[in-house]
Each structure stands twice: as structure tokens, then as C-alpha cells.
Amino acid sequence: MTRRQYPAWVRRRRRGAADGTIMEDLAIALTAGDRAGIRAMLRFDAVLVIDSGGLMPESSAPIEGRAAASAGLVALATAETSGTTASINGVEGLVLMRDGAVVAAITAEIRSRLLSNVWVVCNPEKLKHWNRGSDG
Image (tube, helix red, strand yellow):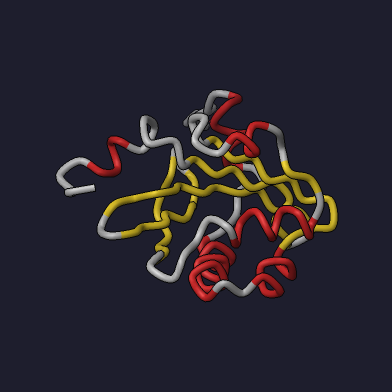
């Protein structure tokens, strides 16, 4: 019996991927606007990358550091935002919704049990498949 060998991109994606527990904690902190809670989940050298499709010009460059990354994440959620965990490209992620439509998909990498790299897609073109059948 041979062991299935997954392609390198699949192995990289799964190695270090955040688990459901930390993504659930992130959802709770984001929807509560808990900047200190989010900051506590991030490594000191955390990097936040936001793909807004040009809607947020300041998001074109990676946001580096715990304080800046937590501020960037808090800015994504409003009082009307809800979050739920979901499988995103084969890894555990977080989907932010507002008015029944997905407004962001978040995946992360962990190191030493803290979030080290966080990727956010809020580009409406890339979220179309998430919003099929919704009014948003």
C-alpha cells in the first residue's frame, strides 16, 4: 500500500494552518470589536495582508506588527458584522458577513500557537461565489 503524496502547494497550505478553535476565538473578538483580544492572538511579528480589489488603497502593502495588524483586523468589522468558521481553500478559515452577504474571507497561519500571517480577501470579485443566491 502506497501513501498518497499530496502536491507541494497542498502540503504548504496545511502545514501551520490555523485550527478551528483559534479562528472561532478570532470571530468572537472581531465581532465584539475586542482589539486587545485580537492583539493577544497575534505574534509580535504578525503580518496582515488584505486583498480589497482596490477598494481600500491603504491595504495594498502588508501590515506588519501586532498593534498595526490588530487595528487592521478591527477595522474590518462593524456592529452589524457576524463571523463564522468555514473551510476556505481547504483550510480552516473565518467568513465575515454583513446583511446576509459575505464581506471577507480570512485565513491564517500559526506559529507558537499565535497567529503569524493573516490573509483577508474582501475583494467583491473574489467573493462572488460565496454570495451566490444572496441579495448582497
